[in-house]
Amino acid sequence: MENIVNDNSQSGVEVSSARLKIAVPKGSLYKESVALLGQAGIDTTGLDDPGRQLVFFNEGVELYIVRPTDAPVFISYGGVDCAICGKDSLVEAALEVVELTDLKFGACRFVVAEPKQAAGIADEAYQKLGVLRVATKYPRITAKYYQSIGVQVELIKMHGNIELAPLCGMADRIVDITATGTTLKENNLVIIDDVLASTARFVGNPASVRIDPRVRALAERLQNVIDVNDRID
Image (cartoon, rainbow, N blue to C red; front, side, top):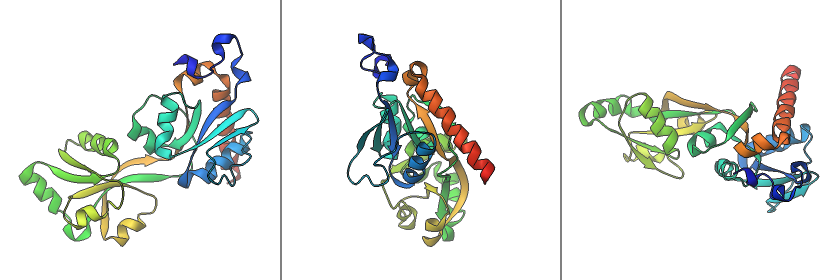
């Protein structure tokens, strides 16, 4: 694992001679991630309008645009040295990474929801059958939650529009991610419990964190930027 950080380490080349590899998440976290990296002194040239380009070789860094759910994979398997991704992606992936900084943006939460008109019915069914059917895109997070409260569940893994699962009778409840709860309300679902709060995190590959001082230095700069922004706010 140690050799992943720098392919030239065996030939005597210093770690600092290689570009630092950073994964930047697509989607809702992208814009703020780019802005924060720029404030921390990273050359983000090209990221404002990347088009279909996924890799940028800038001064001292290689920037990889990745799916948020794939960021922990790139980190754990040494594809990059460090990354920004949501806490939810880290928990769901359950891979070996080092969480360095809470970046305090991209706040959302995982919740349990059920149809408003069916309030209490799932609990009655559980008393009779001893199991709940729960639809989710996040089976690890969901399983961990229900294990923590001692409830037996049958998980239905879905990839989108999971709000439909309880509405058509396929599941008793859902576990999903939400920022405002608007989509749930629009589909006549009510939140009955909180599962996990999530914000963007700066994380590192374990070997990179240990060997390459630039990873921890970047974490410190990011934390400094966050502290300054908090004072301004």
